[in-house]
Each structure stands twice: as C-alpha cells, then as structure tokens.
Length: 143
Figure 1 (cartoon, rainbow, N blue to C red):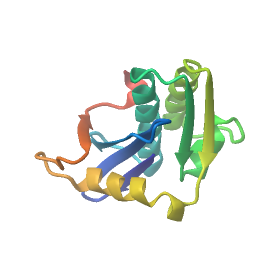
Figure 2: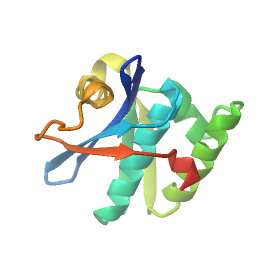
Figure 3: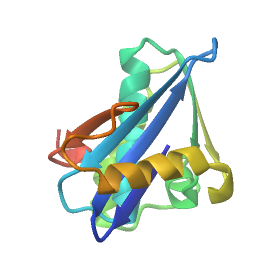
C-alpha cells in the first residue's frame, strides 16, 4: 500500500494478493484535504477493509511508511492529533483478523503501489479502467 499527496491532488493505492496469486489493485482518489501521512493511513485502512470484505483471516501489510508502521505497531507514539483517529480505527480494524503482520519496506521496493498512488492523485473523473478506482469524500477516521 502507498499514499501520495501532491499539488494536483492526493491518492492511495492498495494491492491485494491472495494465496493463489490473484492480485486486485485499488486506486483511491482522496477528495478532501490530506497530508502525505494521512494519505498513507487511508491506503492502510482501505487495505484492511478490502481484506475484511473478501473474508481474509490473516493479513500481511507492506508499507513504505516507517512512521505508519511504527505507530500502528506501538513502537512510536502518535503525537499528531490528526493521526490519532487513524491509528485508533486501524487498531480496531486489525482486531477483526486472526493475525495482522505489518512490515516496513523501503520506498524503492514498493514501486508498483507508489506508481499507482501517484496515478490516483492525478487521475481525472473518467479514471483508469485497469484498476479499481474510488473517491473518498471524507477521512476514514470520521466514518
């Protein structure tokens, strides 16, 4: 998963792969004000929601955000007030699974998600027909 924020907009990308190697890519355009970190949390939460929707019991999450990884695993404290809601929602959602493993991967090893999150942040309304694209109108912490 990855999130992206730039002057043209913001987006999040989730790549889900099951044990049989079936891959689903979801590109989210975020139509509300975000920071780079909130975009990454939106991607993280989208991945958890999709995993739950498809009936996953065990989840492995790979993110290039050291901050998100460390905050959700409890290694770092959450000092930014706007991220506290995200962490609370993530922790509640993670309890829905038998197990959740969160792994930080270097940015250069997360290229597919990075490319697709940038696509989501610059995509027009017609979208790209090869990936699932959605628009979130409000932060996930407020749902």
